[in-house]
Amino acid sequence: MKKIITLALAAIISLTALTSCGSSGKTVSTDGSTSMEKVIGALGESFMNANSGVTFTYNPTGSGTGIQAVTEGRCDIGLSSRSLKDSEKANGLTETVLAYDGIAVIVNPENPVHDLDVATIAAIYTGEITNWSEVGGNDSEIVLIGREANSGTRDGFESITDTEDACKYRQELTSTGDVITAVASNPGAIGYASVASLKDSVKALTVAGVTANEENIKNGSYVIQRPFVLVTKADTTLSETAQKFFDYATSAEANDLIIKAGVVPAT
Amino acid sequence: MKHKTKSLEHIIHGIFLILGLITVGCVLLISVYLILSGLPAILEVGIADFLFGSSWEPSAAEPEYGILPFILTSIYGTAGAIIIGVPIGFLTAVYLAKMAPKKVKAVIQQAVSMLAGIPSVVYGLVGMIVLVPGIRKLFGIPDGSGLLAAIIVLAIMILPSIIKMSVTALEAVPKEFEDASLALGATPEETYFRVSVPAAKSGIAASVVLGVGRAIGEAMAVMMVAGNVPNMPDSIFQSVRFLTTAVASEMAYSVPGSLHRNALFSIALVLFLFIMLINATLNFFLKGDRTK
Image (cartoon, each protein chain N blue to C red):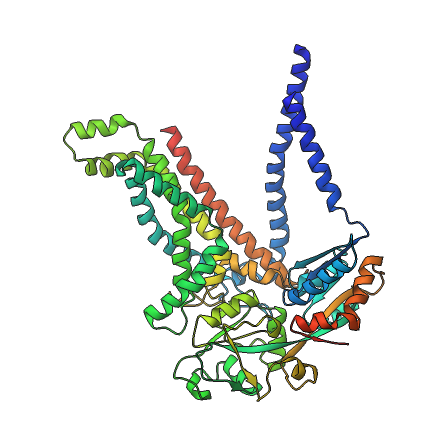
């Protein structure tokens, strides 16, 4: 008898688990860029608060995976921290810029250097400049910290500084948080990270005298920046709830939240 | 009533069989999937160029897919972890199994179990915050992340498997062996190292192989301390990338269906073969134990 009860219970549990997986019309699923975590998290939370009974999910997998997920229909909206490639647009995807994110060049707070221009940053990352004393700092070797190949942040940084495939990294880490931790624990390190996720444990450099802040990113004077993109399929209409979220995220209403998350709204 | 119990038993048997087959099915599915998705890139790049090419540049204008740096790093890293971890683990096991007072033994075994339960990301984080700066200061080099840091983290991570399995093997040595040795006038230490250890050698060897398996398959912790640049491991301070981290760090961003993504599957296939080899060795040792 006991066995039968256990079996029955197991069956019930697995059934409920199955049904809860099934997507109802009341869910918005997003998938993609880890850099967008803060902004999309804030938007999702306030969207859920405003619409009771709606579930919002965010899967932080990376821009490439997010774009793939939306192509395969595994999520409603893909999140990418780079513009879509032409090949991806040819696959029937459309992009809507949600916000602009500055990529800050960060050093250890002990480092006396506080300003570099893009050309110098490029020279440092390609290994032409290897000692901080060459750019007005202490006599110590420069330790280059970066992200893994194809990361949205690395892609953005390398394309803006024109250093694609030429960077002589000492460490290639897989998340923004790891880059910040590595730079914070090494006085000779230089790294790059999304302005939105900066912490006090590292110091953001000014680039050619321009501080990485909202105003300068929005007016374009801070040059190391990239778009945060919502990716959707051109030929498929979103579910009612997903469309509602899409409209909300791109409306002026959401701007406060986007600014709070440290990035600059596109609208 | 009897008939009813029997049919119920048959049903339960059937359920257990199905559950067992799920495991077998998963193994088969993964093996077939890995081979199918791993082979094309190896064939496209060429087996020799893939396995012995020394440069990995998947996103360059002219991509190169040589995984020799990863293979060597994984071998060196695992060997280093074994060189550091096995003596510590082995001697701890001898102490725990034969010499330690009961209370001390209980405390140490509890600690070993906890060490086994710590998630690998925590090992990585502690390594990143404590070990990497420590190596940098100790050796006066610009950056402490690299092969040495990974070896130390791995050595600590394999300790629990080595200690636990060796203790079990040593405790299974018949007491008569030891009594005989002691009765012949050998000191306890002589007895442990000349009698107990040789008698438990297949179990201890198996524990080392298990440690190798754990070290070669670890991804998260080494990803955070090894530096992850695909260099040849020509110095212990070099920033290096392991087979596991090569797959883990680039999988998320590689374009599906591209040669790059397929090459990552090929790396996984190579890793898989390594681990199969290690498992076969493990089976060999364990079987040797049984036939004796």
